[in-house]
Image (tube, rainbow, N blue to C red; front, side):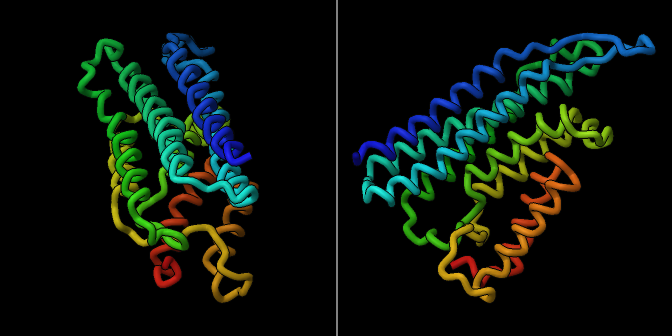
Length: 254
C-alpha cells in the first residue's frame, strides 16, 4: 500500500512524457489564408501537450493526498516527485517555449534556418525549474509559504500558451505569443520568479477563518471570474494576481 503514492507520481511522469511526444511531433506548416497571404503556424495538436501537463498537475496533487491518506510519505517519494515534476513542469514547458520561438522566427524570411543560438534560451526554463525543485527539497520551512514560484505553477503557466493561442479570440495576444522578444521576456521573468526568494502563498489552509484565508479567497474569486470572462487567458491573469496578492499579504506566507 505504501507504494501507491509513488505510482501516482510515476503517472505524473508518464503524462509529462506524453506531453513531450505531442510537442516534438509538431512541425511548422506554411499555408495561405483566404486572401492569398502567406503565413506560418503549427498543428493544433500542440494543445494536447497542455492537456497532458494539466493531467500531470492533477496527479501531482493527488499523490500528496494519497500519501497522507495511507500514511505512506517517504524520502524516496519526495525525490521521485521532484524528478517527475522536473520533466512534466520543466522539460515539457521548456519545449513548448522552444516551439513558440521556432514559430516566431518562422514568420521571418528564411526564419526556419535561424541559428540554434536564438532558440536555446527556451531551455533556461527547465534549468530554473530543476533549481527550484532542488532548493525546495532541502528547505523544510516552505509548508504554508513558498520562496519563489513553485515549479508546477510556472509549468502550468507555460502550458496555457498553446491553449490561448489556438482557442483564444484575442488576435493581439496571439501576435505577442509569436514575438520572440516577448517570449524571451516570459522565459527570463518566470525563470527568475522560480529561483528567487520572493515570499509567496502556499494554497493550503491552516484553519477556516476568513482572516487567515482572505488572500486565498480573493484568488479563488478572481480565478473563477477570469475563467468565465477570459477563457484560457485567465491562467496568466491569475498567475500575475497570485504574485501581487502574495506580496501584498506577505505576512501570511509563513
